[in-house]
Amino acid sequence: MTRKSRMPLGAILYFLAALLLSFYFVFAAVQGDYGVFRRAEVTAEARDLRAELTLLEADVARMENLTQRLSDDYLDLDLLDERARDVLGLIRSDEVVVR
Image 1 (cartoon, rainbow, N blue to C red):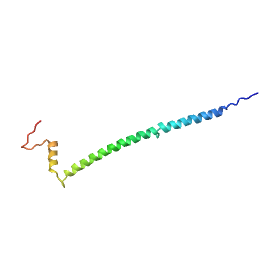
Image 2: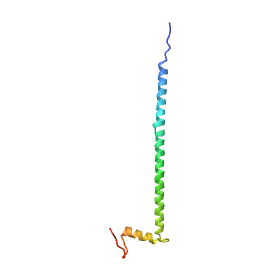
Image 3: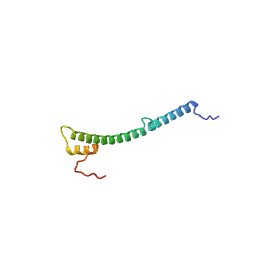
Image 4: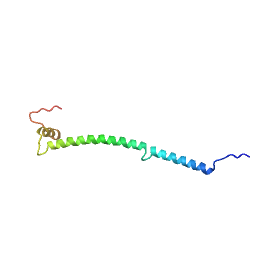
């Protein structure tokens, strides 16, 4: 009598569980909260935020320059004249305004 060797059911379940667990960890490594795709998203977002920070720092530097030019220590008459015209709508008596 010849006997066919069969894998026991426990071994099949063990390998199936190991395979499913491996698939889970691979999926988590790629798609999870700390996965490859999330890392790419965070890197792109960081790059965008650095660019925005650079623009905001330039804007702050420009405002600091204008503020310093309007201070009591350093008064730029051209800037003062420009701001008075823009904010208050003032004009000199010898000027003609065309709208």
